[in-house]
Length: 220
Ligand SMILES: Cc1ncc(COP(=O)(O)O)c(C=O)c1O
Image (tube, rainbow, N blue to C red; front, side, top):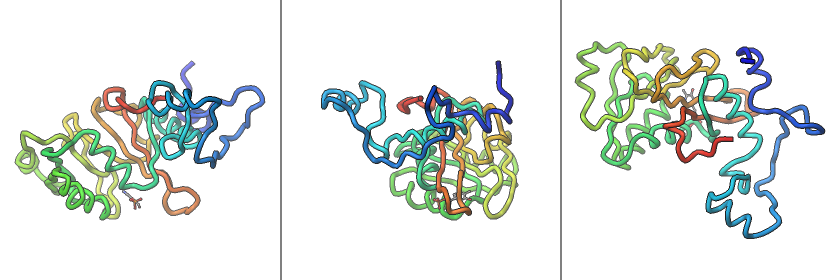
């Protein structure tokens, strides 16, 4: 039976078995134990699936990531410890040296710097355009090597609303609360989300997508 969005908000991402904690446990261990070094070797070589190092995968993070992916109809996701890490993974998953990004000019300052300076050093160039640009202005920003469109669905701090249809034409990395935008309408969309910021109790970001963009991510 298909669960409603309300049920998935509560239940998705974690299903305890008999005798297991009702609440998602906060697993703080950096490493995970295995009986043999052969098994550990298989994990390192990605021949076997399992947790072995928290920076790569952690059960608590995976539960949160799976919940968000479920809310938005994604296949898999991963949490990162900063917004720029999530945005970097989103863009770098699609672009490589020689690639080009079209981005809305009204995005978070750190993300602007990531695109304008950090990724530029890696050979990925960004053209910023006003979210209110005309179709002609937008067309002029695209190049043969444009690989990605980046915008914040509700920009911080400008609060401009990103017109995904206008900008993306099927290519987007966008941000907004997952329950507001379900089912990843664009097949090539790779959303990154700000999961916790102001409360200081959690600092997570998430990037997730559909199978084509999830290659290499281990789907749990
Ligand atoms: C849209 C957006 N992106 C990114 C961030 C934060 O990114 P970082 O964790 O890299 O500082 C924020 C924080 O408010 C944000 O609103």
